[in-house]
Image (tube, rainbow, N blue to C red):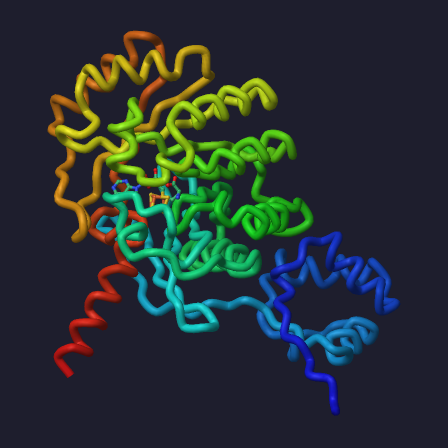
Length: 363
Ligand code: SAH
Ligand code: SF4
């Protein structure tokens, strides 16, 4: 019986792995470097058309692996009214959809990418959490979002460079640890996409083992932790995964992360009226973070269909910030970027799914 060729994406491989895969078949490392440059410097898209040197051409065409590239299809693009945020709904090979956002503020261009289809963590105010978990993304599917964002930016203005990356789209990056870290190794490689590790932020809901692993592995990225509550009850009401890794365990892990890495931690706090925006909460938060090199990011709540809570009133939000600042805890408001393009995590996908379900019900 003929051996069936397995299908693999070249975007799943970091450079050392690509080199060793070629070496196993007797192809020289210099060809790995050429293929890498073609993929990540030149944004090569067609493996059949590319003019590779014969050894590489033979490698691509022969063997038991059928090589592909990840090129998700843009299903929908929305642009905010100020033109500074563009949101893409992307269709993957298997038909599932994810979101990627490209933001350009103060001359800085940032891609916000997804790490999973859906999310298992179930935060009550989050559109992605409300839709449940579907599957992890492969490293190549994560990398391809960065390639797409860079391509879209270049198309709009060839002089602009994509320099920043935030893992704040759909999914929980530390629940998909290996694929996420491999993808970040690929996009930060300075022979390719070359996004500086200090310009990459990983946002986590508080997967404690993942935070500790990042510290032990000396991952060079910025860490952001979504906190949203300053007592066990307050947090668990918004972030159900807090029952698995308690607030106490999470804060201990953050201290340990700080001790090992010496790095600042960015905390995120979605302000919700009457749930987590009181002065009392702010004061408890101050005690909780004592001794941690922390920066607080306050985020206004984006409304979602599955959550009835409201965004905090301006005055409450300002008082919350002032209370934290009084103790010299740096605390800033995240700009509400592109709410008119459903820029909250998972909102565009949720809207599309709802429309499809309604259309099917009506058919
Ligand atoms: N899973 C990771 C990263 C993706 S969510 C995490 O939770 O950190 C990125 C950020 O968006 C998180 O801080 C999350 O709490 C916030 N977020 C999600 N839905 C939101 C909403 N409807 N309004 C405001 N912030 C939201
Ligand atoms: Fe998942 Fe983050 Fe949304 Fe929570 S906020 S459900 S962890 S994507």
